[in-house]
Amino acid sequence: MNNPRKRILALSIVYFCTIALSGAMQAQQVSGDRPGLQVKKIKDFVIYKDTLFHAAFPSIVQCVDSTYLLAFRRAPERRNYGESGFNHIDPNSYLVSLRSTDGEHWSESPSLLYAHPFGGSQDPCLLRLRDGTILCASYGWAPMSAEALAAIQKPYFEASGSLFLGGYLLRSTDNGEHWEEPIYPPAVPAEINHTLFQRAVPAYNRGALCEGKDGRLFWVIAATDREEPQKTSNHLLVSDDQGRSWEYSCPVATDEEVSFNEASVYETPDGELLAFLRTENFGDTACIARSTDGGKSFQKWQPMGFKGHPLQAHRLPNEQVLLVYGYRHQPFGIRAKLLNASCTDFETAPEIVLRDDGGNGDLGYPWSVQLDEHRVLVVYYYNRQTTDNRHIAGTLLEIK
Image (cartoon, rainbow, N blue to C red; front, top):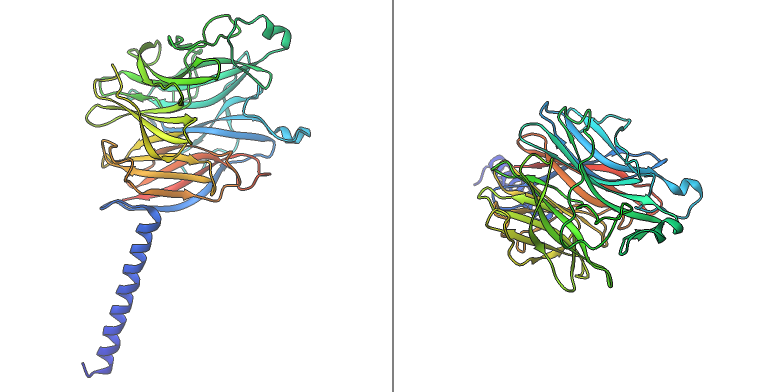
């Protein structure tokens, strides 16, 4: 090749091809992509932040009118009162919501979703059914004096001067504009604690419920099954009437040493039920339990081989699963995995770091929703430094 112009052109082509290949390889390494599917983070952004409030524990659904409903727990930022810190157990906490038409631009002022008459509410967990009905599962804490606690049937769960009330659910048939009166599910057989009404704690949990192919609703709940040392286990409740009533089905995960608590349930395309479990006394290792008989029983739980709490699973258009979870170890942030349709590759799937710029471990609880064929929004609560007040943030992903 004696022509200098041709030589320069050839070298230029080689150079740019090398750069492009290097960039593609770097993107795959950073994102944890799977063959044929690439994950690209478009941006991180703040959805809601107010220095007067502690905002946390969000969930999100797309309504039948194609708008998006985001719910979270809001409580006073008590450091404004001169207190040294804040507490997740706050009798003045309540459920609020925001709306968006595109997942990126949100209403500025939250609307009240529900305030419990007897105390604070936590962790609103949204589920939109195929007919458009929206469920919201939550649980509460009631402030109690020492005198009142002395009259409660033991055992009970008290923390920071509040008594645990257990769970409840709300239903809406108009895209979350109005909510019906609370539904109080039954206590599961393993539950030992009592409420201020002198009965066993109603079923509760933080995590995603799911609607099965046959229309049944599945909810993996937590129960305190031992007082000293305290331990919790997971169990399955099933509803045949769109959440109006619930029946106990079976244990999901129990152990003499490991506690299982916050959990999300997911149905695979072939009808298996998967429970993604947060643990205690197990090194923060995420676990999974699988049912192959429609929720009649679960196989023995398995460690997933990574730290994460809690977790939420979202089905992508190609039936792969985006599993998102908080990471409460340095570097603090939000992480994810892309799993196959049956979620059998949880140990080998690369871990995707969505964010690693958190100020401390008081963050996470991510929840994802599909915006269009290729874009997914992951919402969570976050802080950038220890003194930063907790706020609701989002990460916009392109997955194709």
